[in-house]
Image 1 (cartoon, helix red, strand yellow):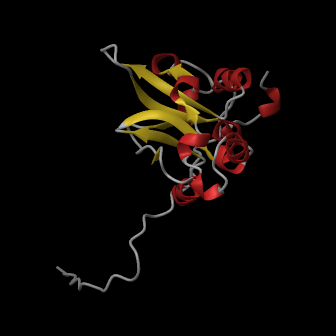
Image 2 (cartoon, one colour; image 1 turned 90 degrees about the vertical axis):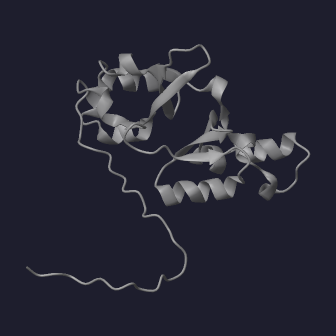
Length: 181
């Protein structure tokens, strides 16, 4: 029997997490199950950001994690969603014009995110029997880039956010996109 001897090595620089692989999964047809395009938080850790984080730092977090959206948190509760488009689009300039702030560095995630009350969600149980085509129709009807997948909890205080769905990921995985209609 051969044994391997390991020796400790010096740790160079900072400790970083590996870049997440953009694994969009298998290609789907319009009638394939929609469940194949979700980021299921029972299997993958959700990408989150504190509401007070500076937007450029949040964007850097997205790049490191290989995602285009972050769930926005306050005291371990989801209070919104921020996308790379929210940060790189018109929202920061609109915020500066409407506020007393004058510097881009002063803008926080809470200033440009979509608040919880304005997010669009689909139910976990309904999603399990939906097709990719039906999910695409929800995106088209709402004009959103991301949908929450919620599983109502037993109490009345809230719901469990079970997953997140990206329109870009759905469209990338969907074959025969022109046939969907």
